[in-house]
Image 1 (cartoon, rainbow, N blue to C red):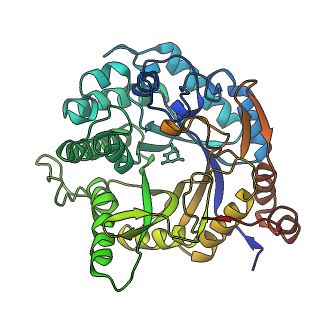
Image 2 (tube, rainbow, N blue to C red; image 1 turned 180 degrees about the vertical axis):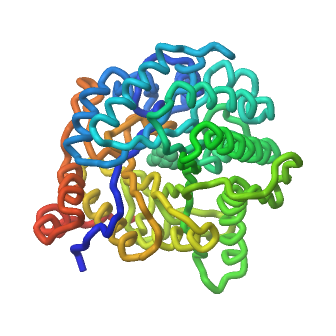
Image 3 (tube, rainbow, N blue to C red; image 1 turned 135 degrees about the horizontal axis):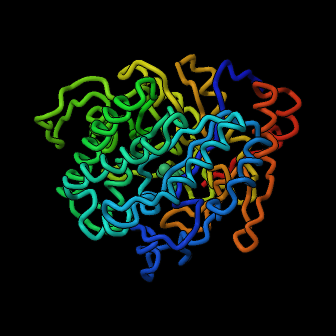
Length: 424
Ligand code: FCB
């Protein structure tokens, strides 16, 4: 069936501060982008989507899309430009934005940490040091105090596994370290930071909904019969995602993470956030896309079934609501994105799992970390020079799904039927 109803699934869009706000801010990423050779197209986050100056215009576009939910991040460096110094101006700016979102009938889901550290924190070791947990707690407290009555839904940490491995193991992201023990330490510190923030947020807003946006891959062995591929795909699943999800959600730390002494096991999530983009085929201890499979502009394999497979396994281990906190694709010509959205939503609604929300990544094109401005993930396109937002077919399709509470036959014929994926 190509048409379906959303069955209560609520749609939103997601962004992250460093990827859309723009501005010359002293963050780990602004510093990194100024070093030669770090960003594929040599761009920096200084222009991004200039969202900081275009809040009204962007809220108007969100209204036009008809989304009920908007996931947005905070730029910690704006809020705390020097250690212990908080900017009332920056907090006020976010309060203003949140108030306007609420007035537009859009529920904000606020991300406290999305790969972005203030420059001063980066200089003193950031997440490799346990000291940062207390610094993060103090920042969360200040944010909570300022946002009273405006926010109930929180993501404490975005993709702790991706951050720890890219920044501290592969060395591709700031601070560019390549150390396994350090990456493990970073995972431990991010886990404690989440647990502490979870408690703090609930102390201040008892009915808050707090979770982590976990990056999950659908790992599969390349050769089902091959012992190395078999063991390696389980190993990667465990080390890359299961171990940290368990530590953060239940305070059950398993090797290589060490169980903290001072926190009791319990339930530290109100929803499980899943960021899903691609599966990973594992062959001889390496992972990547399969061969002859659909891929996006970045060569990431497209496998819609993966989103339901992962949600099913999360739901089994962690009863409760699931939010798809990110799902999207890089497609500069918007040639297959509507099909991608259709196929992933269909998997979700047909799964009969307690998936309550879906946030498309990304609202507009945005600065894609080490890949720079090149990949185009937006429902809306962006002309970086003029900052003009372009209403892609994908945006029209998404708005239509929301307006009709599902994909109608008309919508399917108009936006999906003639589209196809590219294969590798
Ligand atoms: C996720 C990140 C998000 C964006 C998408 C494409 O891993 O959370 O910021 O970069 O990938």
